[in-house]
Amino acid sequence: MNVSRRTQADRSASTRAALIEAGRRLFAEHGFAGVGTEAIVAEAQVSRGALYHHYADKTALFDDVFQVVERDAAQRLAESAAGNGDDDARTVMKRALDEWFEACDDPEVYRILLIDAPSVLGWSRFRELCLHHVLGLIESLLEVGMAAGKFTRQPVRPLAHVLIAAADEAALYIVGSDDRVTAKAEMRAVVGRLFDAL
Image (cartoon, rainbow, N blue to C red; front, side):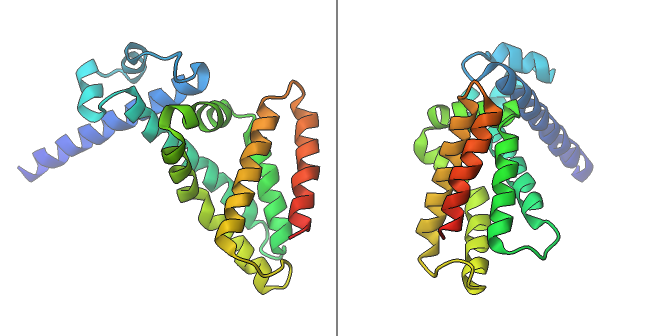
């Protein structure tokens, strides 16, 4: 009985993972509005009933897809920020920003995270999920920089929100540009000066 229960749990987890992976590929390629549930179940190779067993609707699946893509993007930024461990907080923040701008070339990032998520999930849910993954990283870097005297001591939480907003707006500027190389260079300079002013 225990083995049967575990097998059912494994099957359920496998189905859910297949749906998320299918949604991730399709939403990145076609956008939320361009993907029907028929395409999702075909891509995942599961039944329509399996989709609705795990998710109330396509938006609920998108929420899970968003969380996976956001988590992966945050992990990518954290790994980039880690560097060699000898850099000061300002250098680390600039390196993470560069990584974020490079990530904007990935359809998963620009289509799922930047373009579709705010409208599909609603602003409150979108911001809640973004902050869950990235806010702690930025706050930690600010605390380290302030403790080392690299940044002026000020309230960390509101400053972290301002920096997240600046990075997101910069990313939207980049993905909306016809010349992303120039747009990235412009935004590196602009946001870099913001970091320098800290």
